Length: 402
Image (cartoon, rainbow, N blue to C red; front, side):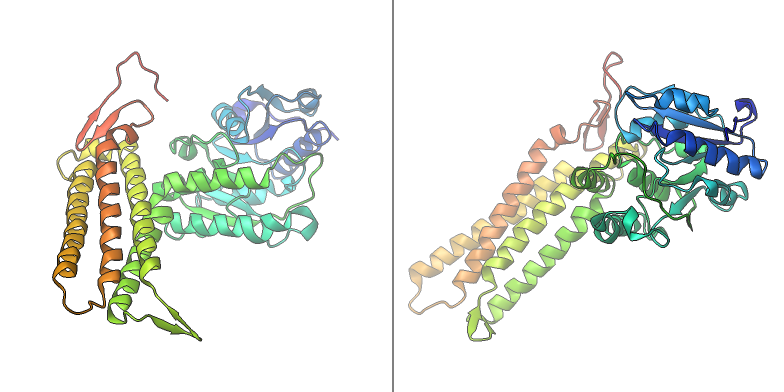
């Protein structure tokens, strides 16, 4: 049976279906969504975004009463950007056109938004999905790990299936988030930015079915795109905090090495924590530097430096100052050890530990000074502006703006 969507001017809900060669399933998806919404008398439209299909997907969608637009830029996120922008409903539902999502549950998904209880509702898949519908790596590792990272990045957003593409949300709220992802990482960016904006996000179990046709997912490349997106949006979570943990651990191990220069007993062996402590110190500081640079970039992009130009010391100045202090301390320690070695008449038992520590200080100091000097290049924002300290240099009017 074919369901015709009501006049788009009356639509309260727009169901957006990105579509790439889904001729075998897109019509059934349209019928299922329209039938469910007609049954509860919700004015709606179904909008299919044809993302360069080379089959009859667009023709089938039109035959089943959908409005069809074409998005030539490849990528799941690109198709969603086009669909959300063109949607005429105040509430948008996004899903896939491959029958994997049960679109008869659209009324269940939109009800919290209609009631004003949520800004975004996620169709949670994991609790009701049979094993055959989702690869083991996605179900047991990929989705849980990404969901954990997103909960951390959003300070506790109650989400267990962050990668579900079945969502309902207020269109105006999502447009304000300025989502830029063009691929599958669109899902992660939406949630992190929604958390920052204070939007209310809830989940409702909607299950998951075996898809029709060929999957467009790539486990490792799509997973990396999500990790990269979270890294860029939450550098404190991914870099600064782990880096600080490594630094504290390195200092702790160094202290142990100084107290017990003969090493620790590990079974029949003696373990010297001196060298691993240096590795932790250097790696930790490198991670923190990278995290601070990304954090600074975010502040530039979100205008924090423009709003408070005189309230904070510039990152380059901090890098240079701390780097010089640390580097000089390391060099001074090395010189002191050399002098002690020249004039020593008895063995000094902790010179190896102090030398390793001094080496770490010199490396970290050089890294900080280097970042301080090249920061103006790294801190260029996406519009071509240059942030250095409290000054943000805007691009000329003729330059491209992303």
